Length: 283
Image (cartoon, rainbow, N blue to C red):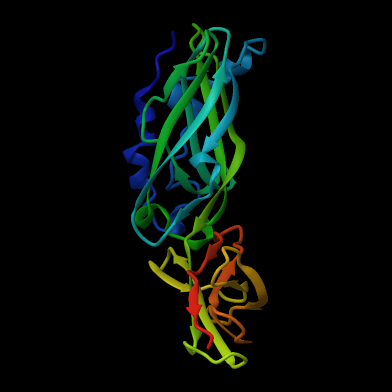
């Protein structure tokens, strides 16, 4: 049985240290992206020589329950990753990470798992469900706003055979990492006479990972929505765009008692968000 190398520990604390480097130093050199050899002790050259070797089959790779991973300006977040792997000899271990960059030689972000070994539960003699967790320290690991968007997902597994046959794919799938968004609303005056003008304002902001503050999200379409006091359903009144500070402002006519809110559909880098409804009493 092939013995795993202890270099696999780099997927824990050493990665967190590496990710603290400035962006100028992060172009593939300051961030460590584990390889199959480091994680499993598998030689790629040896694997290539055994072209007829049976490799594990990997499926059902899941990151954060299938939901986008959303980060604010500070804090630590832990999320689960998992996969299913099969091999005639059974499964010994598995691995998942997320990384950002155009290719492996030019990556500027890596989220590696906390555990040196996955927790693999056999569901049959050949198949196991394997789980890991990943913890991200926003203040250390998300240092550029350009890290928001699409990340690559590495998926790998090693069989419980004498050869240590492994499957490793740094481009197995992709997953979204996003900057947390916030949205406010205020409808005035309150109360208001029927037929009079109501002014609805608000602001759309999102996390800035470089300043550690929230800043206005500019030129974004946002829907003004309304629901009657005795209804549970919002309907769209109109759509306007945020200004160069992320501000929203429009007017409507007062008709009946109800709640106004702003609704943002989200983008690839920023999640959807709804403001809490602001009640207007129409006299």
